[in-house]
Image 1 (cartoon, rainbow, N blue to C red):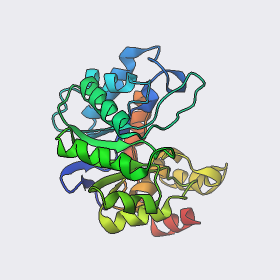
Image 2 (cartoon, rainbow, N blue to C red; image 1 turned 60 degrees about the vertical axis):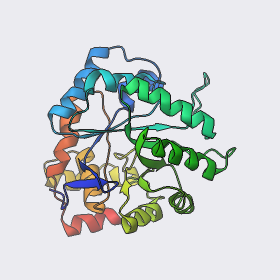
Image 3 (cartoon, one colour; image 1 turned 90 degrees about the horizontal axis):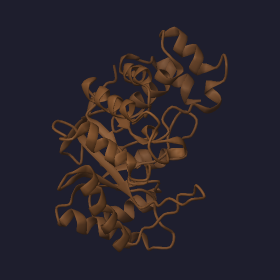
Length: 278
């Protein structure tokens, strides 16, 4: 079991440190509705029944579809925290161009409020900085939304340490969501900054283990030792890497959901952690 089982997002929202990311519940290429709509709702409700109390989505997933699924499967959100994101758009060519203009973010937040059927969003995250919009203006829009009571806490995604520090001068930042996993640790400095400031770190793409997952490699060896799966080892490593870490693995399978959550019970030894650190 990980040393710290829960974390207070924004010093207020207590959540278990293994959440659920909803992106995979959409159709192919995170577009449209899945072929089996009922299964997506069953997975969401199954996660809640298994004790997950932190759920992450975004208006770009679908687009819009995932937030509607959350409302259908989880509303009312008693006892759970729901986070969403705004600031990415979708194009017919499959690209996800950012739009960080304050007016766009305000409209996007209003639309998310309607889809999620809430008056206040627990955690609203800027999905990605927009190079065409001054970063301070985007963050300032989220500060205004917080002051208006439309969002409770502000989060960032895909940011650098410098951007995190700039944002913190504008509004309190409760979370950062960057890619981070065994195979990609480029955001190590951002994680360390979050640790220093008590900011939740939500690693996206948490199951990737890169070269460490090669056949016969460290992840496979450790998995065999613990009678676990490589995915469980990857999640266990994240949970033990930092007390501010809240992995949000996603899946459209109830079986995989249960497998992911069982990572809570995989306790890696100091030697195993050292092996994975290389």
